[in-house]
Length: 84
Image (cartoon, one colour):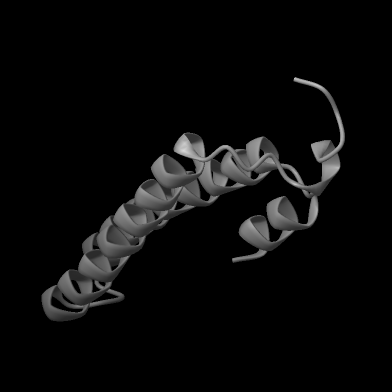
């Protein structure tokens, strides 16, 4: 969430998309941590599946948003009055 907020505040669509990519990567890191937590028996199979599914859902949402933004003509305030 913090990566997304930081990217949004930069007022650039491309920097925002980049921050979404970082956030998506962090979700991948979380999946790795979930596997380790399961292996080390900090969480059980049910909890693992629930958290893993939620993480996959967030990854898909972030990816969809990135696709949408990459198709958008909006450039952000940082580049609002600049020539292409």
